[in-house]
Image (cartoon, rainbow, N blue to C red; front, top):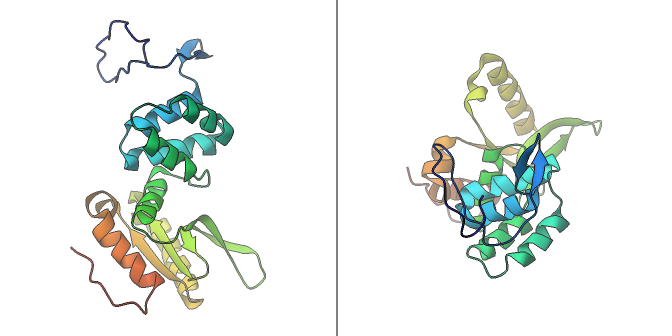
Length: 210
């Protein structure tokens, strides 16, 4: 980020943004950096929603900034482009999200008008000890949603996932799994349709689009 009016350098692989608000840089390993709260709000304003939500969640999860710092920064950005989106994403932020795709899946669910799921939902066994943790879940409906990345195809992980799925199914849980194709190519028409049917099985069935 550079001050307003300064020449804009062209650096390969680096996106240069002209600052429209003053800020006091912080130094990390001797390098002047944009303060975390300022960086998060700028990203939440300027990135597309699906990319911005993980940035906000990740900043809170890592402890880089606190909710009150983001709230103060949003006030400073009140008249700037994209601040409405930034306010919305900060309000919906959840530091419990463990990865980028989990944040994105939660946002798709929210934008699709479904009830908000609980991130990192703990499932207890018969002795009230945590047996499994779901990426996203609706405990009252006994429905869970998870993103399956490439690591889920590894043999040991695959066996663990099958044991986990069978244990949850035996206790009435309906698990729904989504891949990169679902999340990035057909998020609303497929993911929302599948989860709506799982959450509200008595409603008229809607066939997901391919």
